[in-house]
Structure formats: structure tokens, C-alpha cells
Length: 437
Image 1 (tube, rainbow, N blue to C red):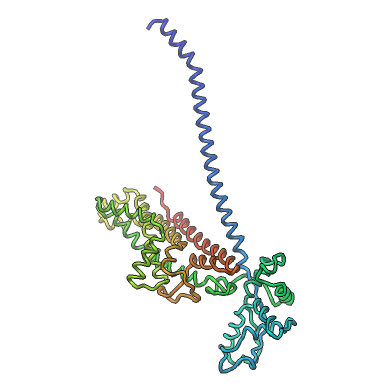
Image 2 (cartoon, rainbow, N blue to C red):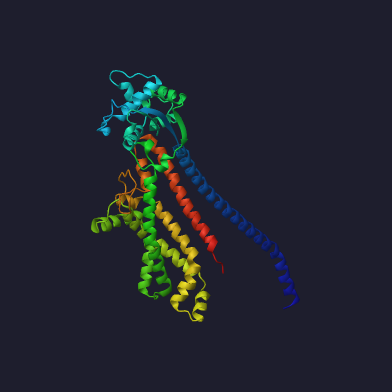
């Protein structure tokens, strides 16, 4: 290469240098802008998710927190022997008797047609009459004596005391008349009505009277159903995952099974409800609306998730653990059950708890197997008719009485608390037993 050629190349490179620096600078600027845009999109996505979560929680808490407070009336009731036949104590009209005694205490007179006492009775719960009858049943000697009774006030009266029914609403558009408001103000002024934490919400079962309706039956039903689900889904799911991951030959049949398990995890939950209705109730004759059938259906729904989570946990265990166990003479079964499975257990427990929490909130399959029926008492066994929390929420939300709506939001809060507790348990178990390699 001659000196003239080298000089020409040097001049060309020198001329091209500013262009190269400009291109590099532009590219760096473009990369930095892309990173900033990506961060902005991420922050925007998280903000939108947090915003909607905040709106959801605010609406639920705003609607439901009032259900955790209620108003009760405490009054003395004279068990009048002139109105209660000792040979037929169930035949007496306790509600009318108690209403008239409360009216007399408050200086309210009834008219000849009983219209006033009828309106006054609407602000008192029939629970007062039930309690008077129960007291007399327990001790017939109380006839002719005074007893003190405490009972929740009627649902509409409770809404008035909470400020959800006001005089600003036109009288024709509310369930409480102006005269009833005057009576309720007098009851509170006299100290007969007090507000307190609503223990009835957790100690009572479902009722047609909103002030007496509680979640105890639904909580018991959910617990029984979840127990059945766990007893079926955990051993079957973990066993199936162990076999497929550690012992099954890798051929087209196992591949087909794996694909179908993954597909089953995406099947809509109502399809499992139809399966439960057709197989377990119509064919096998299992009791409708029972925690047993609900638990079996939810176990089928949770199985794919348990299997997938278990297989992922087993794969996360390093192969060196298996090889070391086999190298010192352990059998395949010993290597899996003594070394691999204990190390994979935190992930298995986490996946299992999350799948059970997901099953706890399911409603559609339970509606298909008849768990929408009204069940006023506690379930005695897994074969008894029962309600569960998601279905209880569905029933209350569709009730016509306004007082049920605040209880719907309260039931959602209780269900969310259960699910948060289960998810926290999963996180704690994972952190407590997690091993890093």
C-alpha cells in the first residue's frame, strides 16, 4: 500500500468518525428512551392494578363495615298467665304481648284496630318472642314473672339508627314511617336501645330476618367442604405428580396425560359443577347440597393445580440430590421419599394452599349441585345440607331486603380475610422451609 492510499484511508476514517459518534449517541439515546418508556408502562400498569384494587376494597369496606355494628333492645317482659296457656305455651302470641308491654312502658296507646301496635311491632324483632318462649320452655315456673330480654332491633330500625335511612328521604320511598322514627328516637332516649359489635353475625346461622342472619352455618359448611377437598386433592394430586415426574416412563401416553392435566387446569369451574351434578348426584345418588359433594367437586377442580405445582417443585430439586442418594445405595423410592420429596415440600404446600384458597372462593360449581338452598341450621355432618360462604353471599345479594346488602359486603370481607390468611400461611411456609441451591 502506497503512502498516498494510506493517507486517503486516514482522511476517510477521520471524515466518517463524526458520523459514527452521532449514530452511537442516537442509538444510546433511543435505548435510554425505550428503558424509560418501559419503566413508565410498568409503573402505569401497577398503578392501574393498585387503583382498581383500592376501589374494590374501598367499596366493599364502605358497604360492609356497618354490618359489624348493630343495635339491640333490652326490656323486661312480664309473662302474663292470662295470655299464656300453661298447657300450650307455644300457642301464645308473644310478639303482640311484648309489643304492647313496650308500648305501655313508652306511653304509646294502641287504637281499637291494633294498627298502632302493628306498626310498633315492625321496629321490634320477632327474636324477642322466640327468647320469651325459650325461657318459658326451660323454666315453666317463670310464668307470671318478669324476665329481662335482649334482642337485636328490627333490620329497618337498625338502618335508621345507623343513619342509612333518614328523614330526608320521602316517606313513601322508605320502609320506616315518620311515626316509627319518633318511636325509635324515644326508645334510644330512654336507654332501651344500645349499639354494640354485631356478634350475631358470627354466632347465628342464616335467617329470613336480616337482623338475625349470621354466617356461622356458612363458615361451618365451608370448613367441612374444604376438609373434604383437602383430604381428596392433596394425597391424590401429590401422588399423581410424584409418579409422573419420578417413576413414569417418558412416552406418548404420559405426554398425553400431562397435556390433559394442563388443559383441565383451564376448564371453567361451572363444567366441574355439571360433572358433579351428573355423576355424583344423579348417578351415584350422593346427598344434594352437602359439603361432601361440594368437596369432591372442588377436589376435582383443584387436582390439576396441585399436580402442576407439585411437579414444578419436584423439578426444582437439583438432580445431584437424587444422584447422591442413589450413589450411596438408596433405592429409587428411598431417594424420592427420603430426599427429594422433603426438599420439594415447601413448594408443594404453597401450591396446595393456594389451590385450596382458590377453591374456597368458587361459587358456580356449588350452585350446580344445589347448594343455593336456604339452610337455617348448622350442618351436622358432611352429608347434611349446608351452605357455604360464596353461596351465602350470592343468596344475600339477591335478597330484596336492603339490610341483607350490607351483610353481603360483610360476608365478602370475612371471605377475603379467610383467603388472605390462607395465602399468608402459604408465604410463611415457603419462607420457613425454603432451601436455596
